[in-house]
Amino acid sequence: MRLLTIGAFAREASLTPRALRLYDESGLLAPAAVDPDSGYRFYEPAQVERARLIAGLRRIGMPLPEIKTVAALPPASVAAAVNAYWQAETARSETRARQVALLLSDLSRGDTTMSEITIRYATRCATGSVRETNQDAAFASADVLAVADGGGGPAGAAASAAAVAALSGTPSLATLAATIDEVDRAWRGKAITTLTAIVRKGTQLALVHIGDTRAYLLRNGELSQLTHDHTWVQQEVDHGKLALAEAAAHPQRALLVRALGGGPQPVEADLALRTALPGDRYLLCSDGLSAIVDRLSLHETLTAVPDPDTAAQRLLDLALEAGAPDNIACVVADFVLA
Ligand SMILES: [Mn+2]
Image (cartoon, rainbow, N blue to C red; front, side, top):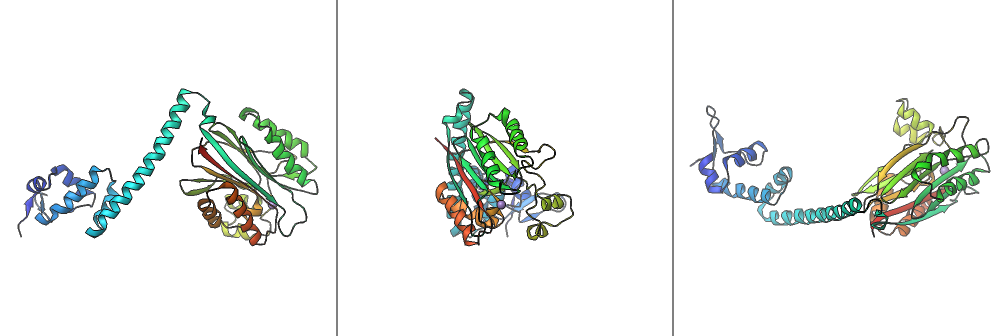
């Protein structure tokens, strides 16, 4: 068999020896032989086709790991793989173009991005199949999303309603903490409530959280839980004293270690600042949903149902189908380009 030196092979394939060394080091194209003394690489003429394919894929900007996958495909499947890559790339670049447009308008017009990103939302709040009263609350407007889960006696419903109402007047981001303090003081000794809420100023979001209501974010197909439950079992998990699986099945799993009105000390709220991106979908919900409907079903429903109202109803239906032992509150909100 006639072997070509790296220089001759590079000329055949219209590539540089340097590119060939890179392909070798990346595991894309190994030389047919390497001289053990000099380290010179030698290639078979039949390798030219693969070298040209790799070069072509590099020219269209495909990352090396993906080239490795595509170059290993049977020749008949390569065209389809390149087409799939290009479609995904086009979609990514369209998303980037939208984000660049948003950023530019943000930079040129200060805080007037409110008109660029708009929000579509839906809420559901239901008693469920077992409880006699509904102590959950849900609220949504263009500026505020909130869920709360009241307890600690018959006044629980009033406490959760008061918590979301306190935010519905859209406190500024600066006065958010003071608003939370007021609700906390007002209910101390009377009732307790959780609160998970997002207050929005344009693309700036403040996420405030106390208790075991939750916020999730669906972004780029991934569902993230943004909040940390303030429950005794979660605290035990955090301290390494309880396994996550034990926590989910624990009889005391609903016991809160932080709640508005819980006293005697002023409540410590979790606060986080986030940026809304077009395409983001937020879910806020009470444990009547998150403890009853598994995460995979939440993820699937939020991914599969484009309309927020239909998605919120579907989530409520899932909880009802699962027996709905607790009250259920949820808010689904989409950030979209205006
Ligand atoms: Mn509950």
